[in-house]
Length: 383
Image (cartoon, rainbow, N blue to C red; front, side, top):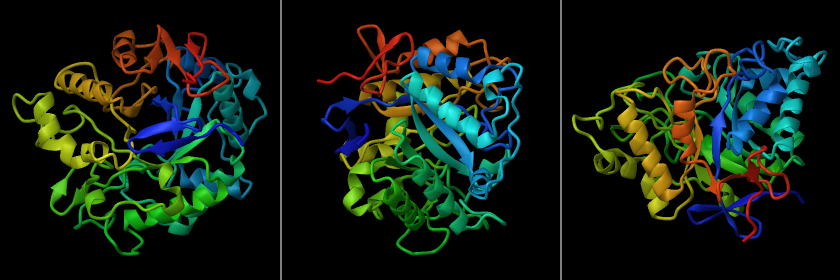
């Protein structure tokens, strides 16, 4: 039957009802046109995946484009930008086979995977477009990509979650506007998310479904993917699979954009009262569903550092699930956990994030019940 997870109130639990804590990281590239993880011209994938697990991250959120998955569906394999001298084990493999090798690598190291549909097209800037369809990539292509992945990996319990779409966004005045209401319009994220979830769960009823917010709702703006206010009026309904639903906002500091709640002298309490509670913490408070902060991070300097500390406090106080953005150094507005060589860890940033990685008795705790998390970790406790 596999080793899968479920929702109970605002917690994520295993089949025995034991609470787990997802504390992961993002590594992008399958969405950008690299057609593999970014950095594989500099580092060995097998060694790097082991290193991520050794540093205590128990899940890898992997961004994809609809364009790449559609190519795979059509038995076309865009070239993966990989140095096979550095990655001899990948020599002769196409981009899909390299991903399969990555899945096996995560499994071997006790690390789980979340599939993230990050953009319609393969592009470094693909995420800038607010919708899940664009030009040659239709709504049906979007659904089909999710179905194909869910069916192909239905028996693979290393892949435990699907983030249906990264950062739906847009303003009502824009062409690409992700809205959230009771309609069946093609740009209504609530409707499309429910349809997409049903299609994924038809192929694999065991996976968790991550639903992000939008940007604008009834005059209130948020981060892209961060506005979950409409859940109050139009909650996601997964029917018999409601115990698979996790809401997944993104949140950033003023180094990314100076939002109104970053007023002079802001602190933890003001952030909670002015933004977090109304935007998405009410979901946790009301025990409607768990929260997973799909992206958070940034540079370890002001004006970002104060916010980072408050965000880490929030995650730690409530044991919110999270996937840090990001491993890659080539995220221009946040930086990464490693330096430009994709190999040297930024120890100041890592030690900061380490405080909210799942740990017990000085060991990192994995999500797998049989395979320990890296060389410094343990399997999840069976309490």
